[in-house]
Length: 119
Image 1 (cartoon, rainbow, N blue to C red):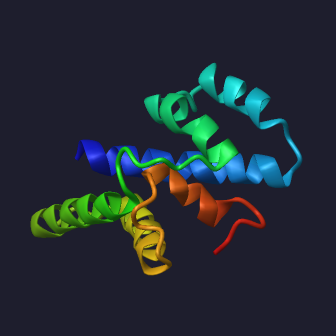
Image 2: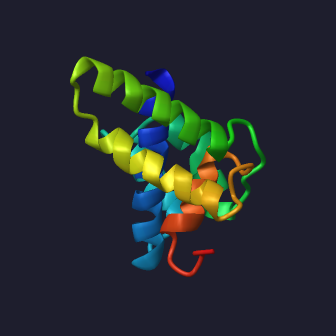
């Protein structure tokens, strides 16, 4: 469950930074704003700059994120719990694996959300 929430948070951060980048915002300033609001998270601290700089040295791979998201979804299904955010996140990490990006760090999900970075 910890990894499920972390993966959802990572995907959300990538989307927020990707949108900010597309709007021409200064991503350092945007990360500072996130850090002082309800958008603050440990993932922002560990992955925000990596997403901005495209530094996806692997600490927790996208392939592991896909696997763990799948485990959480199976547990939810077994208990009759709907997990739409986990489903959407797994779909993104599965896409990374399919496109040969599974060994990137989970922060590499930004490669799917920043304009012009799509594989």
